[in-house]
Image (cartoon, rainbow over all chains, first blue to last red; front, side, top):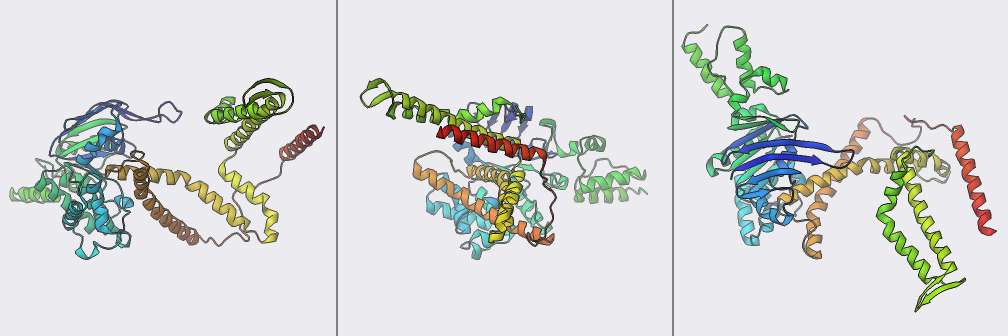
Length: 288
Length: 210
């Protein structure tokens, strides 16, 4: 499902002294089937942009097109239900949305809302629990008895159960331990490659952008300052510094190494794997 | 104005309630009986007492709104709870937990914006899972509130526990012998305000009985 923002403005609390323009004349596209990372400082408009993706917010002016559906300031709320079925959003700390008596019921909540029968919804819930790696024996427990990591998985399964075409993730690994973080990011990568899911990832972790994304959108103060490949974004350290963004670990290592003047990287590595490969390459060429 | 509050704010406070006020005033005017009758039609009658009662009701309502607007616009919630604590001070002699009451009040006030943020977030999350708030028949609407209220309760309890832990970690042990960051002094203006208020009350009482 292609997503396109056309000259979108969004203003919070218009006509009051607290007026705040969060998005400014924003035009950007998220390609179908891509793994798009949205990067930007706190207050750059990431969350506002994200809430436009399934019509939680409607643009103050301009339009948002998702597949064949166009949302403008005058779109009726009733027309948005169909859209929400196709775009699943995993919010920050999504475990806050859990409420049902059992894990299984909570995962089945969204499909039931979108018109599946209880039996079908339970079937989907079991599949999704398996997919996110929840052990069979916790399915009948209350979601509030689980550990933080498992609650996160239940919440994510609850969104995946909608079988969305676009999966939006707002810092999905915040507050998890490194192992849980890795497992969850791997799971999203798998969903992306196996089910051709379009993924939109909002993150502060540049390593995640380097490791997983194939497209990156950089926001600053409500405006798009770059929409390109991660390779391009991390090409110019001066530019990143100017916009208060960090480099992925591997790339920073490569730049620092290059600054010693002893090696020159032909193509800047973004991930640890690429770094290792180019180092092997350089050593093979007999560089000192 | 003494309080330096723009008069427009007072009018804004009245506006949402103006229809209710006018309705009550009209009821008073047309249904109260007594005094000279000016006009009559079926059960409706326009009498001098009705008009007097009606204007009383109008003034009362508007004054209540003006006063509460004045209080909330000039005084921060924390100051109100501090004031309550010091005014209730004498009740300590009767074993009323004054300090605890004012602490509860300030904590409650402090968490209103937080709770509103939280509500907004959870509503967004549940909307994304296909809940429609404020749509459909009454049963549907009540059902839609469950996925909102349960997470709110859970997070409020968690937050209360966190807050208690954080307070204990910083050595909080209750009100006895606790010093304050904001100390209240009795100033000349306070005495003046009290005298002025007392005088107004005496004048009003006198006018009423006269």
